[in-house]
Length: 466
Image (cartoon, rainbow, N blue to C red; front, side, top):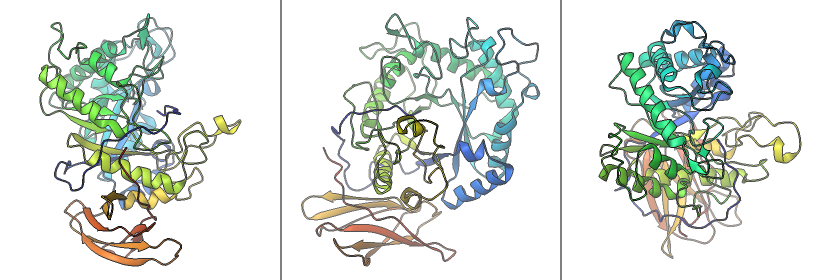
């Protein structure tokens, strides 16, 4: 979910050259709910083909419990076998997951609220204190329905946000972390009952920043992991057997270099805050050692969003820089792109007309933005001292070693000239350096095995320092 922010640029962890500390197995997760869940079978098949052509292998789908629950608005528990997958109308979710699996994609399925009214404590709404017992039964049905068609499971979308889980606070004190821990353990029991006890779902999927209504992600995680303010595990809690914590590190208009002043907030520029918390939790034996981070939702807002939208050129540059930041964090094993196409405009003034997500690679009408080419060929150009420029990039469709041609355009010129050819590693990643000359622009030219030549968008030299 988007969190609207107006804070200014503050700080970024310096990204050093080279790749020695980077995660060499990082996945790229893509989410396209408009096309995969809302489109026709033909549009779904076309979208899967398009995503495959962009080098996507991993998809995320968020399954809302209330969408498939019988009598979801009733306060009375309906008479049905909750563990039986045949009792649920899986509809668009089943169609999307079946099609994605058949097409060879790996699916991350986030099982989330809102929930059926009858599965809440007071049965007054669809978000307040969901029943762990009912959730366990539902998760078992989900696991039985999809089985190996789902590569990874995750428990809840942004459980620190009131749009998905209530209450967040009681008398000014956060409580959502405690509620979430019970739901997570219920999901584990559901998987075990379905004969999939070895599958460990992702934990967290937290929103990036806290407010008076949203619990800040690190504060939420400390509570969910049973950590005291001093970093010790509470005696009443056993170690939580998790392997991966998921997060949505959205940033502001200031871009990936923004660092929020709230110490418990985590945007893309301060992922180190989350890695430090994982280290604390491991030392306290709250979680096993070796836990990793999955960025399961992320995007850069572009115009026409009037509040935090940036130009298409800046969106492409910010998106690539954010990917480099994630790549440089050894614990981060998954990066994400949220939306293929922007949300449709909403009725009303501009402030509400574009209050959805404009983070897609295409406009709402389907026109490719500069980020479309930048997703296939991410490029970051940053100063390396006073006289050099460090270049980093990725050939996303590549399935092995390849090479790219770096081109440049001098300030005031319209002509692109070759700079150098660079070889990538087996995962399509490459890096290079060049002498800095004024206000040059850089781009990538890549010839695919089928002979098609792809061009990345023009990229400016941007500092990733404070």
